[in-house]
Image 1: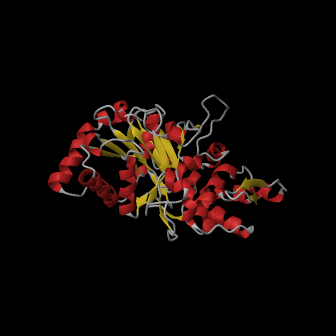
Image 2: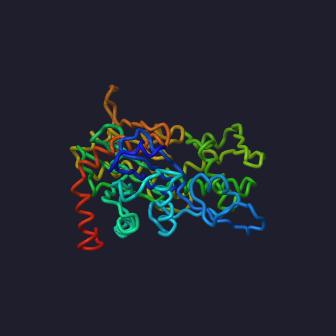
Image 3: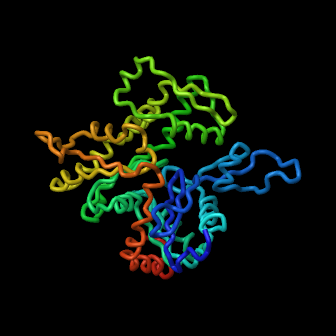
Length: 376
């Protein structure tokens, strides 16, 4: 990207997911850059001149050389656990390899999962104002921006990413805070469960780099079964997945058992609600007059909603969904899955408009940090 492509004071949008970071400028149709939200450090001693240089790798270089690296995610379940690594990743976003711009020249729209601890948001604000010297910062819920991206102002967004699954009811542009539901079961937990199932089938993936292979395997081979009990009894063909070294893995029932974790967290001993219950409970906690409208405007977002048949399953399994007495074009519930890929679910096209609406909040956040201190 050439420097003249950047408009002065154009807001930077950073979709700060647990598994991937998407960055670009407000008004863009899709993010300019997307890379895994992890850092890699060499796990072997360099013994030759001209070998791979560097003690820390981020972005495409970390992906390319992950077999030599110890890979670590700074975020777990939507919460930053390692602020030093997170800050390095944000620095990389502004580098010559990514946005090629100065942080001091652009306001920032940063996303986060709902119901995050306030200290996580405060620390992020401190880093952006004190380290990156951004002129303005607005931290927004991912679900609200996903609804903006569909052109709607009313609906319930079910967002299942890599670290967090949450449902956020929104009516006429107003989020309903007491109705928000969140569980910390998402895509990374599915990857871990798939790794466990593969181990039972005789395939051992134990290093951090091999875990990324399992994640890719999940994305390409796994699916949601409409009838898991029936599929268990059928002799279905195994899916073959080719590993980076050329060998193949035959994946059997693990293909549909692993994603089932989203609906049944009890499979790993977790007492959280399933993804369908999260959606239904969020709507039930809303006002009775709003429920029918919310059920008819369910928006799926996040990479973990891209499993085959997830849209149908969520609609069928959501308890207490109002069903029509007779078939009609406006049957309830109605699930919208407008994002065919993770990149298309981003929040960039409408970010400029949102930032205009929130300009006074920008100034308020900066004022509070400068004169009042943390406590947003």
